[in-house]
Amino acid sequence: MLLLKLFLSFIQVGLFSVGGGYAAIPLIQEQIVNIHGLMTLEEFSDLITVAEMTPGPISINSATFVGMRIAGIPGVLLCTIGCIIPSFCICFILAHFYYKYRTVSGVQVVLGAMRPAVVALIASAGASILMLGLFQAELKEIVISNFRIVEFAIFAVALFILRKFKISAVAVILGSGVIGTLIYALIGAI
Picture 1: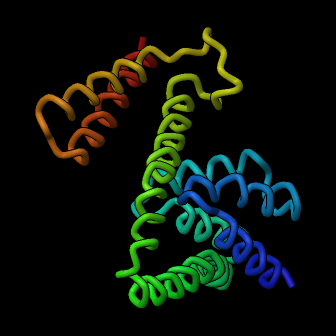
Picture 2: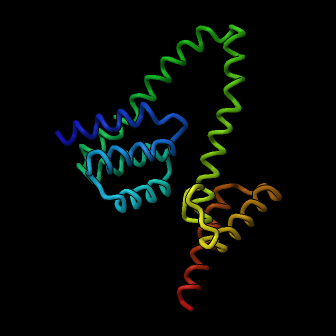
Picture 3: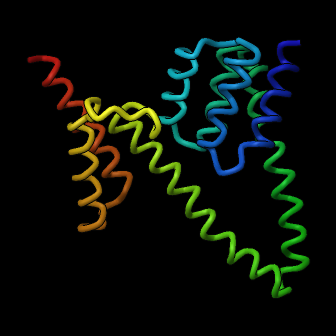
């Protein structure tokens, strides 16, 4: 029964998380924490932190970690497959119709009109992550006194390096992590 509940929950997450992996997080929280009470909010928050740090799409990583935490290997398989199935089916159907009708001018107009919306969704996710990093809160819950100067300085330097020197984003991320760790280790030692 628990495995079926997990599978159906992640089918819903996969079906309704339009806008990318970060859009899935509130849906997973609603299913796992609020509706079914399978985890506490603190456990879920820790799990999302780990899912963000590991390579791969965050929604699939989250599904995998939730499944492992709640039901072990069978949970991993069912949660991950449940999260992937809707996207796979939708992409398969859309690809079929795209290849069949790609030469129709109306299709190109619709795809062109969707580009700004996709850019807006990505920018929204980026702004949310930035606010979480700088204020440890969502945009609507920001308190100026919670501004984190170390994180802002690392962000500003990383952005400057990325734009000015065209260094690999992976190198900048790793360097930022090392510098942040060193700074907080020094602050903690004082």
